[in-house]
Image (cartoon, rainbow, N blue to C red; front, top):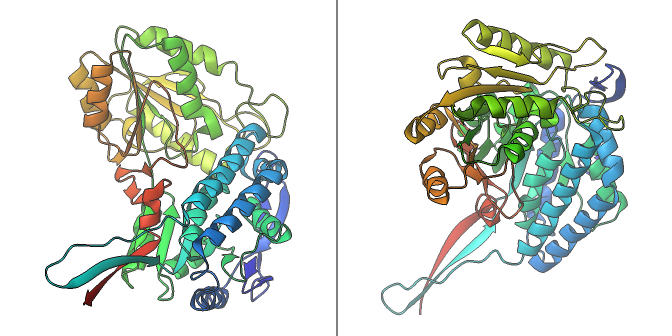
Amino acid sequence: MLVAGEWCDAGDGATADVLNPATGEVIATTPKATIDDVERCVSASRNALVSKDWAAMDPAQRGRILQKMAAATYANAKSLAALESSNNGKTFREALSEIRYGAWTLEYFAGLSDKIEGSTIPVPGNRLNYTLRQPLGVTAHIVPWNFPLQLAIRSIAPALAAGCTVIAKPASWTPLSLIAWAKAMQEAEVGLPTDVLQVITGSGGLIGDALAGHSGIDGVVLTGGVPTGQAVMAKASENLTPVTLELGGKGANIVFPDANLRHCAKAICFGIFMNAGQMCWAGSRLIVHEDVHDELVEAVVAEISKWPVGPGMEEGVRMGSMVHTSHRDDVLAMLSKGLEQGGDVVCGGNALDRDGAFMEATVVTGVTSDNLLFQEELFGPVLAVTKFSEDSQALALANDTPFGLLNGVWTNNLSRAHKFARDVESGMVSINEYPITFPQTAFTGWKHSGIGIEQSKDALNFYTKVKNVNVKL
């Protein structure tokens, strides 16, 4: 791990095995950091902040460094993607796309680094009043295992653009691509001052909690499940530390009879079976009009039957393994419990009889809104299908969940589409494609899907703090 300016082991020498989930073999070991390692890491990050080498650097120069980081990310994308595929289980194609997206994110925030502006405010009397936007400080980034490098860069980029110092803690199951990326940034000599970026590995329960509850941390960013978000928020509240939480989802594709069903079926499969369904914004619910229900289900099953399943580095594979056999078993257990409440499996439903954490792509029809398959996030390749007859019923079904991240609307009636976009209770809505996002667009959830905004210029609001200055002239 990269702590206090050096690549080092844990203070007590403890390590954790890292697996390839497609084979179950150990492919690496990483340090299991201690609380003393956390203290060393936070101290180094605070020193880097106080030195002003980064926080007070010409913002345009910070932008040039981020551009160099983007270029180095593009240059190393294939090797990083191979590592990500081997460690996470996803296909090489998916991993490569995500890492290039991370490079694009660095480019986007590189361009914003010198555009973080205050304002002048008209006030009574002979006065000048203005605001400054200054770096938030030391930020801790607790990274998930489903998109290990892309989601790390998604929050690291705006933090660095704003002049913050960064401590990134990858998930215990999938630490390798973030470590390799940090090494690649050093080898490319992009110009980051020492300790502005650190990577600490270890237990989420121990190291994640220690970072979230540390008085030397000025902001915490987490992508993860709702229980983890609640725990991190509770720890952060001890020091009134602000948080950005991107949590779970139970996205729905709402399909009306006038939709392009062939295009829709492909997008539905992409939205739930990409990354073996291990996505917060997965379209895990299909809410479809009764008139086209059978035709669309048939098209979805036909499309997913064309997706070969296997190790992510194998040629032609469209769906890789899940991240760990224990996670696959959890998903299968939830599926079984949901089926006890109703629903018919029209394809899949089982673990694959082979080495590794593989599961069949699964489609379940006849799922009612009170079924856990409709309400709870399984985080696996399971699509729950529900019929509707009226527009109002479709909207009620879409909103009948504690989550509100991304929903898709499929119709050629733009009046209907815009009304749904207005009324559906989610931070993001996509019309006639799914899923989709860009570095310049807000990634944000409502309800239990999170607090705050990732991506877009609005993300910089979290990584800066406002100071008001009043001058009596």
